[in-house]
Image (cartoon, rainbow, N blue to C red):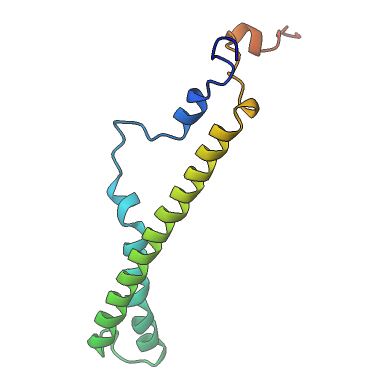
Length: 121
C-alpha cells in the first residue's frame, strides 16, 4: 500500500448508506400491515357474499381476521427489515474484505461517455 488510495472503498460503502434526509412515507411504513388487514377482513366478506348472507354478518370473524391480518403484516414488515439488513451487512462485509474488487471509479465527462453523433439527413 503506497498511498492508501488503493484500498479506499469508502465510496462503495457510502452507496449502501441511507440518505440523511430520507423520510419514510406512510405508504412504505404501513404497506404490509394495511394490505394484510384488508385481506383478513375481505375473507369473511367474500364468504358471506358467496353464501348469499349479509356482507357484515358474523362481524366477530371480520374483527378477528382483521387483527390476525394486522399481526401477519407486522411480522412480514419485521422480516423484510431483517432480511434487507442482513443483505446490507453481507455486502458491507464483502466490500471491506475484498477492496480489490472495488477500484475507485474513473471520473469522466459526458463528452467521453457519449458517442459522437453525426446526423444523417
